[in-house]
Length: 166
Image 1: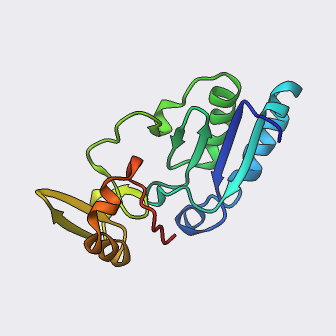
Image 2: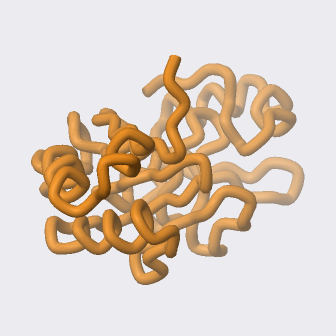
């Protein structure tokens, strides 16, 4: 398997990101790379179309690894900037930055401990108090799974449970 310097995941196959206009984002990233990147960079950057990266409430989303940079609310006019600044020049586009691996999420952003989805606390479908802390859930199925076995979801790294339903 070929090793790439960067792997770009473009949420453009369904769900909230598609509803918010991401249908052409993948093609736009590929086109911008084709037009702006030197040959070596073209070979070193992998672009993958994906259905969901788990931050649906903030889409359209683009995620870049190995840095673990998550961009949110990406509009067509933002794509060239992401390609030129981040993919080709190594500078994170801070105005679109949602999260960077290893950093703490802002207080108003919550993660469903069952499925791992990230969303604004105000958009939680349900909440539940457990041992003095409030947990937020994307839907009733995640809430019910958590209620049945909360320890299963609290002891898992990064808040991703083992029983994802998405």
